[in-house]
Length: 362
Ligand code: ATP
Ligand code: MG
Image 1 (cartoon, protein in one colour):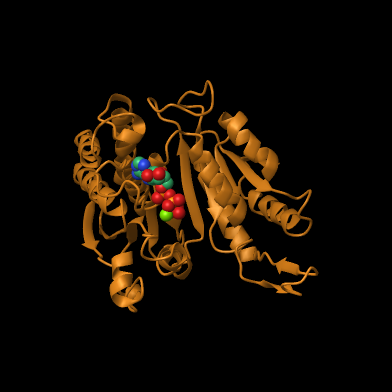
Image 2: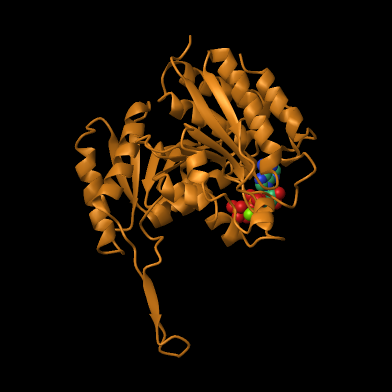
């Protein structure tokens, strides 16, 4: 089967182990694209990393947006080299610019327990943990609105505003309902705190109900963020799709992957579902300077992110969905049978594990 058009992908490895896992992501991506007849052109971008900053005084060239104007998606490694450049400089100068300027308002993180990875939750088996966290990625609690009065005195008062818009809430809620509607279980959990945050959260609940009217088949369940977090640990099998505001989603999308064993597995997608701008796919983990240069980083988070990219580009249809599923099956098999990297208890190198996954694409 062959799709009509070719896709243009920007590969931005960034810093540290981003540079080691990127070639494995591309290796598996190319293998899957070839197997399922998807046309891909990969453009390598050697900026958005800390060496570039040390040479140019900025993380990215001024015309970075133009350089990405004709790409369909960005595959991103990781950014940060705190020994040379403070993390807030590298992060705000690259990744956060992409998220904002490309209006990537959905942050999607699949959470799944694999066979062969010890689970920190007692007695849990693969299948018990298999859900998606949808985080609002552009507004909510993360603003710079507010201030400090009487600063430096005992009378200090701090105000920090949260900002929600109907457009902003509705679009991420709609995305989550759509996603839930496509899945077998059709369950959506909406994170809230309407008992304590008395204005924005009851409003958020109301928007969830309003959007939900268009999705009668989706079973919706609103849960306060405190008990919801507890249930991620105690009853993870209750969840299917979970949608949350920026701050709540940020916390849940670290807690979820933490229950599945290792940070080296978790992928993420920063999506502009309207497709007006490129979406960005990246591992959840950072540049890991502590293990960089040894070829021991686990490449799975990167490879899984590439699979999410194929699925998104082809709108979950035909060859793209098949390629995604084939990559996931290959990841599953290699995690269970080896070769595995050190974080999974094995001795394989990054490239050995990446190659094993590519070889399993059938
Ligand atoms: P961030 O960049 O989000 O601030 P961080 O710098 O706090 O993240 P990471 O760079 O993700 O954290 O590293 C956290 C720990 O996890 C480190 O000890 C690192 O070695 C380990 N780690 C991260 N990614 C991987 C991976 N792909 N394989 C193996 N170990 C990893
Ligand atoms: Mg870091």
